[in-house]
Length: 191
Image 1 (cartoon, rainbow, N blue to C red):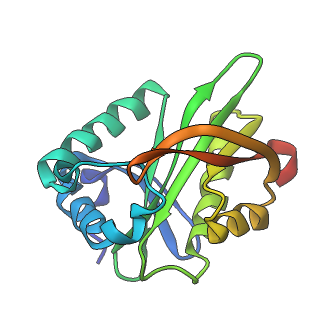
Image 2 (image 1 turned 60 degrees about the vertical axis):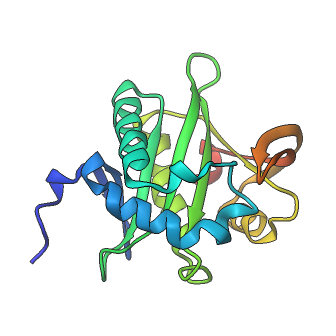
């Protein structure tokens, strides 16, 4: 029997194998475990974090921020859980929402080191993008990727993203500001 998930989730979407949910801060121990298990794996591609980021108390703060930002309409932070075992295996989030004449946002994502190569992230982003295009009426979604992150570049190309150019000194990654490759997808690309 499935646990009463509404106590832990604010919003949940389902794909064939996955559940994508905005989590409440009560899930901080599971999120912390995910980050601790993947700290070294994510280090080369994730924004720079101090040691306190990998504590449950800090993750409670981040999940509270996620919750409030989701309610404000400025962030869609979807944690990816496998249906078969309930394990958190990653996250896809949408941020930098611009409305009016732009109707665009950016997306970011990361996955558990032991879940790569199974098509989970392709499945998660497809489901999440469908929700964002439909519910938020976005016209364009962007993704910014380090040039050497070949698996991520292959992922966005597989999803139908188009290459746009370079973002210079875009984000602080692993101790320094790094250039990123910019990709985008339009709502019409997924119809």
